[in-house]
Length: 206
View 1 (cartoon, rainbow, N blue to C red):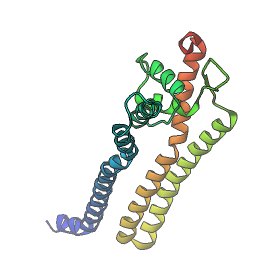
View 2: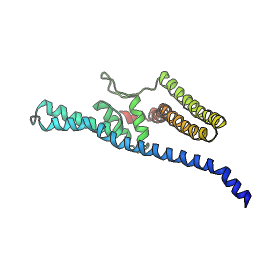
View 3: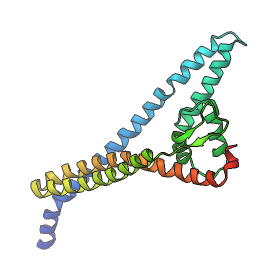
View 4: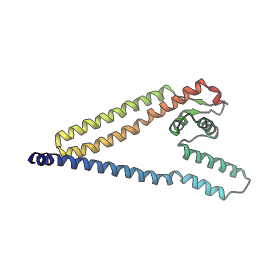
């Protein structure tokens, strides 16, 4: 019995530390959810402005046509997460209608889709600089992850239970930052997957 009591007394600080870390993670998740919900109104601000202007414009005027086009583009931007001109939007919608890729792939492709004013054919351009930036993001995200682990271990070794809590929080922050940074690599990889398919089926872009 005394052995179990001793074990519980030894484990209690670590259980408390784990509970503190779990609470901090939940608090961070709830904060990000609230931030996202609050951001939806901000992203729709321009759409509401354009819609309000559209209601005050003379019917049949050139400005009415311009606002209708702008509203359509703004709705597409909100839905897809990309800002494109009308021709690029039409191409991206056609690719999306193939049903071969998810929203994250289509959103990534918008970054590399080019439709020059002097051309009748859209192009997907992933330059060497884009590839280099993507790989830098990839390695930097791993560096952030391992730095978080090293910092966590160092704080635990130096400060014990308090270091465990602080190190866990530092690790979570480093992991989140690394995940955000790695987004550039994921975008390039997703866009390249579509590009490789379209290079073999160029008629889709015509």
